[in-house]
Length: 188
Image 1 (cartoon, rainbow, N blue to C red):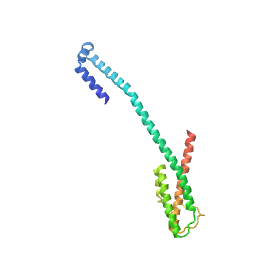
Image 2: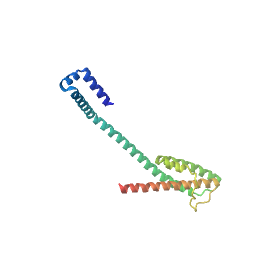
Image 3: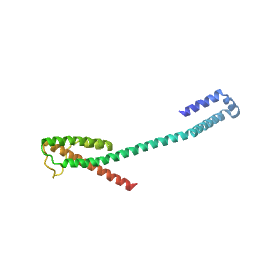
Image 4: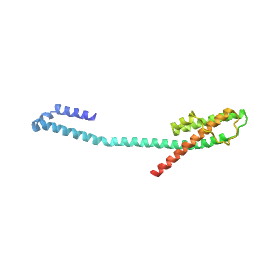
C-alpha cells in the first residue's frame, strides 16, 4: 500500500512541481525515468528505515505475549495434572471402599458423580482430548481389580467399574505425559 502512495506522490511532484520539464531538459526522457525510479527507491528505503524500529518492537511485543500465554497455559496444565494425580488417588480410595446397603450405595454414587465432574474439569484444562476420553466410556470397560469388596447394588457395581476405567485412563495419560516430558528433557 505504501508503494502505491509513494508512486502517487512522485507522480504529483513530477507533474505539478515542474520537475518533469527540468529533468527532461537536462537528462532526456530515459534519464527522467531512471531518476524517477531511483527517487522512488530512495523514498521507499527511507520509509522502511524510519518504520523498522516500530515494526521490530511490535514483533517483539507479539512474541513476548505469545510466550507469556504459552507459559501460563503450561503452568495451568501442570497444575491441573497435579490435581489429576490427587483426584486419581481420591478415586482409588473411593473405589476400594466397602459400601454396605442401598443407602450407602446412593451416597457413594453421589460422591462418585461429584468426583467425576471434578476429574472432567481438570482434564479439560490438561487436554480436550483427555476430557472426551474420560467422559465417553463407549466401549467395553476393562475390569477393575479382582480384590474389591462386593458391590452394594448393581448400579454401584456399574459405577465402580466405570470409575476403575476412568482411573486406568488417567493413569495411562499421566504416565505417557511423564514419559514424553522425560524424553523432551533428554533430547534438549
